[in-house]
Image 1: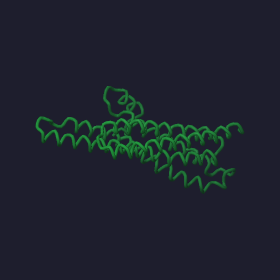
Image 2: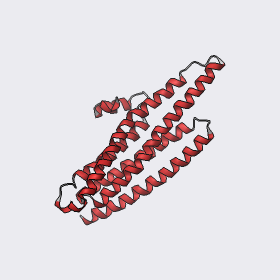
Image 3: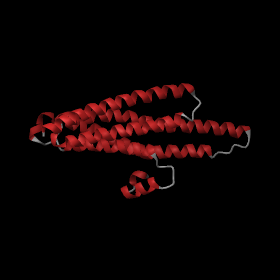
Image 4: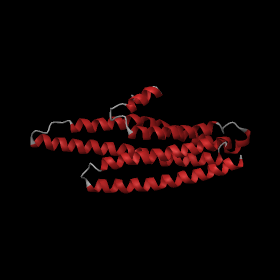
Length: 210
């Protein structure tokens, strides 16, 4: 499992000539990093007398951020596994018409699965950005920059995942599926960008006051 490797080992595998892990796993990792930073800001807020009024909120945000971090972490491996399934489908024999039909169906099914995983990453990014925005606004002001980096990592995760969705959709002939998912991707990207920018505005204000 990729997530059991050291940072150095993961980066070495990422830099290798193997196509997986690739951008999809990196997008999920970016999401996990963003969620982890949100948790850190919560931990630096909880227990501080200055922020006693928001302690309950910070504990709730922390719990939600940790759930998202765990899911993003799982998606690091799931993205690579999905890519490998696509490659396995392409490797199926295609000598007879029956084999060609079976192979085409297997490729389409595996590609759809590989599309849905980065799409899930995008959806979780929106949820995680909402948390980052809350900690930027109400969390420890000394960690405002960390909340900002969280938002940046989450938006990067969303944009990176979008590229993986798009390249997979490009290989599908199911026009309804492609149309629906393409629209969903664009909507999620717009929302992510807006939330990131709003969070960075909050962070900029906090930094100026410090």
